[in-house]
Image 1 (cartoon, rainbow, N blue to C red):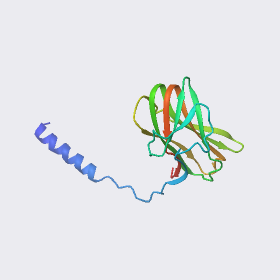
Image 2 (cartoon, rainbow, N blue to C red):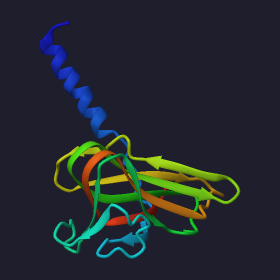
Image 3 (cartoon, rainbow, N blue to C red):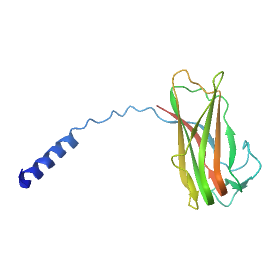
Image 4 (cartoon, rainbow, N blue to C red):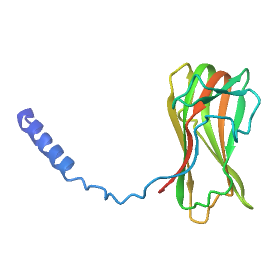
Length: 176
């Protein structure tokens, strides 16, 4: 086939295909903030060993939780109790700043279901390491109809050693 004919024909087909894509309806359910933990103080922070409030380093200007560790550790941050939600996508976003992390830092969320046990979601697909400025991480947990967690646990995992700060923790609910 002659390229002078093929190229214009290909461009015409591509432009028709691109213009004929159906638009998604804008009937999305809004995201609801269930909990917010700005970390301007240590109220409610479960792990007290190896952590401290750092007023000088913060992503929102109000302080952050500083974690310094020489070995892998799980920092238990908060437990929500019953959030009374089902058939939704729970999302746990937070801001993290690693400094000299040898290993990985990531978020972890555990959902407890009465009579069924605990199930988790971990941010292993986007861990942070080394030294960087503030980054936003978030992990989801998908709840089906009838799945209403009696408690949600929000953790930070340091799989290595170094210093990390966490700030602006939230728990959000939105459509699946």
